[in-house]
View: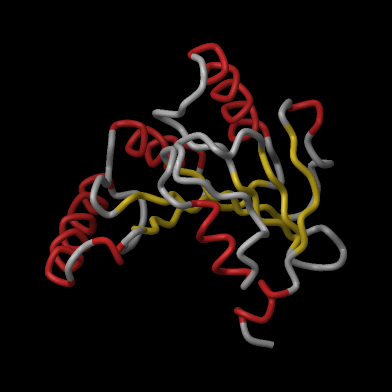
Length: 178
């Protein structure tokens, strides 16, 4: 079975707005994280071949919960779509609340086995991204960087940003190439 075929079986499991409401902490989870409006949900939709799997919007902060998607029938292999960090069109208190829930998920979730940090190629490596990369390194959670929205820039800009990103990652010595 091809990797892409695995994602075609993906099913929505649950949305959680609090830590006590999360799915049981078993199995394997890979979380998609990144700044608000970086395209995390759109990538999940693309991977699964279902444009309606994860809700998307042009408005930053559309994802308001930790969303779980099962990629197998046993529900033990999951993709997790986290709310974005940074700017969102919600109150300061709501952003603080999200930050607390996301922090607890990242710090205490035993089934979290990997992170994919999604960055807008036009605005990569903001302070919040670098903090997450450094956290990943300290906690030994494997990490990949996905530069998104490459369709919005020229091939030359893509080439330059990928090169700059690889240099930044080497300085941080956290992960391989972008």
